[in-house]
Amino acid sequence: MTNAPVVVSATDGPMPELVTQLQAIKAGGGTSVDVLLSHTNLVDDQELLELVELEIRDLATQNGLTVGSITRG
Image 1 (tube, rainbow, N blue to C red):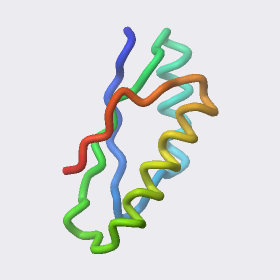
Image 2 (cartoon, rainbow, N blue to C red; image 1 turned 60 degrees about the vertical axis):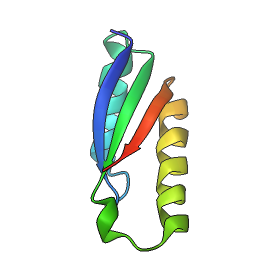
Image 3 (cartoon, one colour; image 1 turned 90 degrees about the horizontal axis):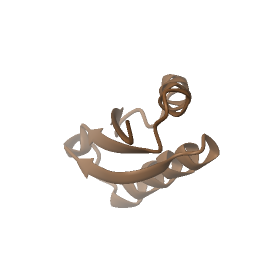
Image 4 (cartoon, rainbow, N blue to C red; image 1 turned 180 degrees about the vertical axis):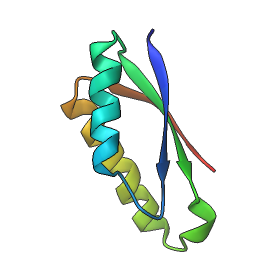
């Protein structure tokens, strides 16, 4: 398994469960994640969305993974 999907709510941002998911993906042999950033239509501030994306990338890197893509939905 190389790419694994994860879903992050744009209104909540990365939650502690994301770290657990990332660790499980890494432990399972994963090398990267594809992220669906959901509920982006509820966030009016584009800078906030960019910060959430940066935080997701940072958490992935801290857990030895890369982000293949972030799709806003």
